[in-house]
Length: 100
Length: 195
Image (cartoon, rainbow over all chains, first blue to last red; front, side, top):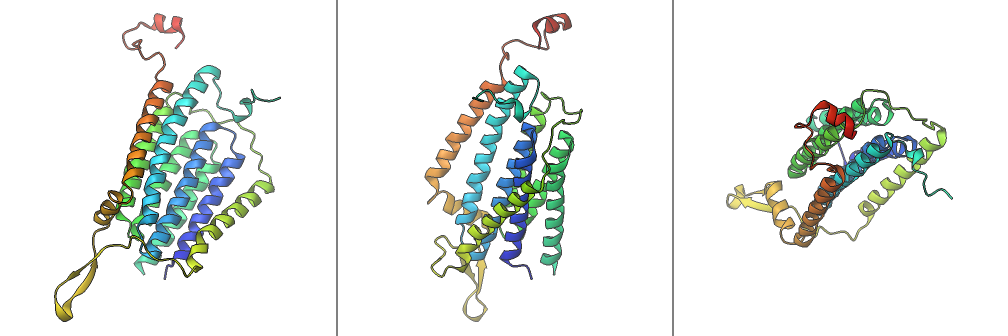
C-alpha cells in the first residue's frame, strides 16, 4: 500500500538530487536544470499532500509554481544567451565582477 | 497492486533520470534525461488523482520548457563536453541530504496537526437514489476549474501578467540584432559583421 509518506520520501530524494546539482555544478545551463528538479520535487510533495487531505489547494500552488518555472526559464535563458554572446563561456566562476 | 508497481517504477526511473541530469558531463544528455524525468513525474500526478496537473506537467514542462531549452542550446556549443571543476566532496552530499530532510519535516508537519480541515474539498456528487446511491468524485479538471476561477482568480491573472512580462523579457534579451536578416545576407557579410 502506497501512502503519502512514500511520495514525500521520493520528493525529498528528488530535492536532495537537485540540491547536490545546484551546489556542485559550475556550468550555468546545468545549474538551471538542477533548479527545475527542485521545483518538480516540491510539486510532487504538494500534489501528494493535496491528495492526502482531499483538498485542492496544494494542486493550485503546484500550478502557480509551474507558471513561475516557465517564466524563470524564459528570462534566465535570455540572460544566458546574452552572456554567452559577450564572453563565449557559461562558467559560474567567471561571474566575479563584484569581487572586492 | 497496480498502484504499488507503478509507483516504484516511476520513482526509480525519475530518480535515475534526475541523477543522470545532475552528474552528466554532456549538456545534451543532461537535457534529455531531464525531459524523461519530467514525463515520469506526470505519472505521479496521475496516480495522485491530479489528472489536470499531470496534463499541465506534460504540456508546460516537456512541451514548452524543454523546447525552450532545446532552442536555447542552439546558441551554445553543446557537442563538446562541459569543462567544469566539480567539487565532489562529501560536504555537498551531506548538506544536500540534510536540506532535503528539512523539506520532509516542513511538508510532514501539517500531516500530524489535528487542526487541518479541507477548505476546498474535492467536489463529490451523488449518483442514483436510495440504497444504490454512490458518491462519485467529479472530474479533477472540473473541480480545479471551479476553484481556480473563484478563489484563485487574482493570482491566476497576476500569473498571466507575469508570463507576459517574462515573454517580453525573453524576446528583448535574446532577440538582439533581430532587425538584420541572416538569411538574406551573403556569407561574407555575415563573417564581416561577426554574428
